[in-house]
Length: 492
Image 1: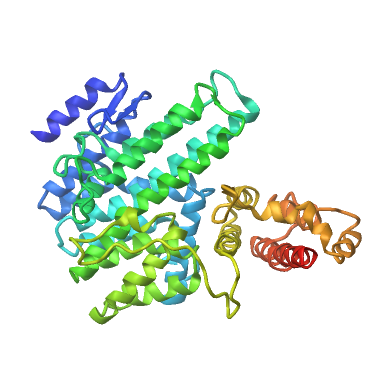
Image 2 (image 1 turned 180 degrees about the vertical axis):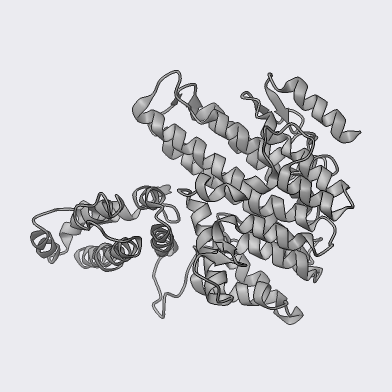
């Protein structure tokens, strides 16, 4: 009866702005098919028959979803998301698990292509006969990444209008509406823990354990506010509003993705505390791939603790402290996550100051400069999956490091005029045919791919990955270090 009423509701509003979360988000483009997938998630939860659950997941239920099914979100991802930043970080991580940890063929996880990791996890969990685990798995793997994809798609549509604006050009609003529809779903009431079946509802339940459900979970309030901020401040029909609209869109999208990560962390701590190994492993697999782009050593440590082996109770405090130390890389804060069950896991204290750098003690806070290595690592990962545009975007616009209130990019230090303070910089310029920005020229050329590259024609993806990584490692960042050293000498 519930599903019938919700389906009828969806059919009524399909031609109107779709009001999601009790009107918290108004989707002008009415993405009803996307929102109706919540009804499939509900039907899977309500069924007690395994075969029925699988059929709804694989083929779709009775809801009007335009031929969509929850399984297709994952199965179609390798083609749909092949150029996406986050999706390729996850492919890298699951390839590492499959190849390095489980000794499977390259680019495979549980004997399936790494690109369909979400479907692989869900299919494995169906047979566990654990209440709602397959639905949670679908949400935190496939649906979560689908939301990210449509945020990226909106961002890229906004970027495209900078050169081809027009009344018929997509400004990103339809993609934003789809992202909101997948996050919230049809039938979700504002701030309600019981109604709804998508990630909004999952976040509501997670927030309740952390005292963050004052009417609406803080995460959901933040995400909806950020989505609305893009629609209000950045986009208009056919174009981004401001000359730097793409960068503003991009900045807000990364903040949304960070907020989307909060319930994953909260539930990982919850199921760790509850010693629920099945759900703990699920949430570890949903979260840890992001850590692979923060620190390969930490990623490996967490895999061993949470995925490859059962978590030892005595190791739990270290899991908490080491994950909390990675919050800045995930884009979240101690305040975002909060205190679990009135202090069972205390809220940490945000502190970004680094007092030791491999034995060197800095006189001032240089923690933001240190984060440039995370940009290098992420670019290396993306190059390995031929996501050249995503790699170039990080190189040009930055991601992890802030300076003077804006992102510091590797390109900005590769092309800085202040390099002239280094006497040896002239030698490099002369060696590279008097090219003032020799490293930038080669890196940008490598981003074109082996088929279009002038300096590296016919180079394989592995070779191009090596070229860009070594250029950043041996030409860009060392020259920046020399530049800052010589500036210090001159000041002295």
